[in-house]
Length: 300
Ligand SMILES: [Zn+2]
Image (cartoon, rainbow, N blue to C red; front, side, top):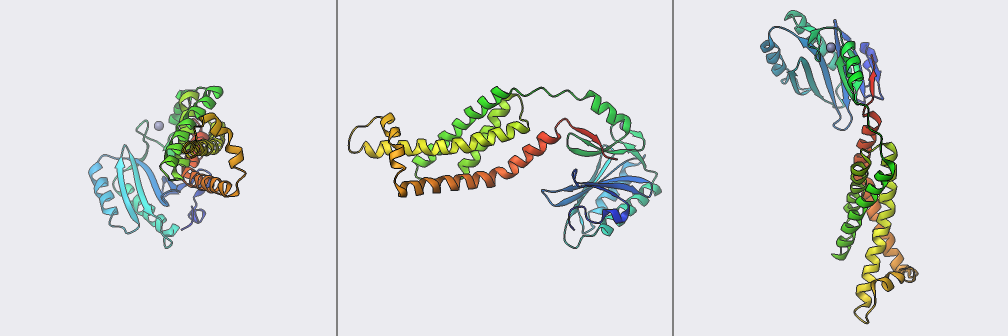
């Protein structure tokens, strides 16, 4: 089943940006999260009742259902995790929710707000990027009491990313010395830049993500030049004594040699390639976080 496909057919609203579908089934409000990374669905329903044992037993029996990964009932919240296969259809999910609604009606469970623990209608809210069910009063309170984010100290953030990148340079040079070009250093480089920005800048914002990435890219090339300079120094030193500075001054001359340029380009490409692959999900997560952190929204 493709991402949130067909939920409109069962009367649900779909919000693709927030990866969520929601709607009423037999008097109960359901929220279905699409977990993009795991390719799973997570059904959520908030209820309260007198007899928790019956519901727990029901939840356990649900795990016999072939489409269910796992499920639980905690803090007035039912969560049912669904395996997303090609065969899965929205009708499967609908019938599961219908059964659950019928079970709740039969056993005296009513919809509740898991925050104030009261019997209440709930709304779908996005709180700090997480889709949850809560009553409108609790949503107002959560939004009002949320601490205002401290501003990012941009110069300190950039300094932090630069300091972090030096760790990446050191790792690259050491690995180069050992005779390897490990592209994973590209990943280490970008993480060091992000962390450095975060530590000195206070937190990482969207601008910080881009700045840290640019620094990581530039500093990887710098690291390659340092490694090359050290290599020139150690090779030349076998014949005559040459200072480090003089060796580094020779780098442009050596870069005139097509074989050396080829080696450098190859090193850097593998570094950037793995930097790209390895930092993709990291960057995406940070990006998502910076977009949603501190942002609350009432979806419906
Ligand atoms: Zn509430």
